[in-house]
Image (cartoon, rainbow, N blue to C red):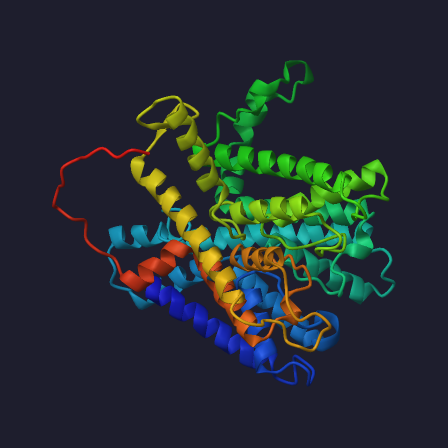
Amino acid sequence: MPQFTLVTGALVIAVGTLVLASPLCSSDEVGLWEALFTVTSAITVTGLSIIDISRDLTAFGQVTLAGLIITGGLGLMAITTFLQGFVQGRSGLRHRLDKGRALDDFGVGGIGPTFNSILITGFCVMGLGTLVLYGFGFTDIANPLERFWASLFHCISAYNNAGFGLWGDNLVRYRDNPVVNGVIATMIVVGGIGWRVINDIWSNRASFQQRRGFNRRRFSLNSLKLRGLSLHSRLVLRSTLLLVGIGALGLLFTEQFASGGVIEDLQWWQRLQVTLFQSISARTAGFNTVPLSIQTFSDAGLLLLIVLMFIGASPGGTGGGIKTTTFAVLMGATRSTLEGRDEVIIQRRQIPDTIVLRAVGVTLASALFVILMTLLLGLGPTASGEPTRTSFSFLEKLFTCMSAFGTVGLDLGVTAQLNRWGQLVLMVGMFVGRLGILLLLSAIYGSRPPSRVGYPREELFI
């Protein structure tokens, strides 16, 4: 199964590269290498780019790019599992149910209906966002067709947490537009929390109305417990709100004292809007409404963005990172250790040891992989030699590698200036980050039956 997923992903990237490099999709400046990097970034819903989307791609090329983003965002892994169901037509029911839980655990009700629900939900959300952006967001675009395409493309990119924009400055020109900021941020959050959480909220909508009644007098912090939802949904929602809030306040604090920073000359509401948007976008989306570089952001602010990119979105969502639930389990394990408990308790529920070990494994393997990427990016000169800069700082390299592995797409102006070795490192990081580090290790080592051999216990000093 993991090998099948890797091969399928590679084949989709190969076919997409040939299509995007054709004269029908791009100009002469886009060769096979540029097309390969762009398609890899689109399939992995990253958003890093070494070409100008509006200038180097034709209308058909932009449509093709949007289709690749949908393919990667709404489930390259789900599509792979779905197609494998036809290949293995003689699989038993239990085997099919296990396949339904294989990748991001979309559900056990059958891959077909679940996949259809994912598509329907995604297209409905993106369609609604497109209408709002068309009517109230991109009102400065006079041509109705261009406005519609800009609205649709950016909703596709935002919901799938891709970060691709039609303009060279991304969304900087709409920094003060609350509609554009609000719609894009909403698309990012809804796509990032995953279909499972959305379906859970929708299934419990009647119980929410009956219990709460939206009575303002009875509203309190207890009403935010969301008892009707599963533990997974509650952890995802709470972790998302917590990370967005901490990220926004953290950026507001770090950039407030940065000399010559991007928010220094802004009014208070503009500062709040910018930091809130960048906090949301940093968790695997890759949009920016202010110039992003080592000159415009402080080192503390960039480090905070790196942490947010590492945590990422939620399981079953369109983003990357180690996932919010992994972060929640690690925090729960830390708390249980400090309290002297032998088990991990989160919201009065005991978390199985296998889940805790998996969270530790994902986090450690991901951190080591990003460190390896940064080391490889630091081997010799990595700049292309064409720009004025010939080298990059360690923080720029770490930020770019984390952006690639977390499938974020935020760029400090480094990606386009890298030579092909550096861009190859980023492509491998994007591919591994999208499929998941555990899936890669499983594909390399294969599945092994559980050992029946027991070993004696011995204490260690930690």
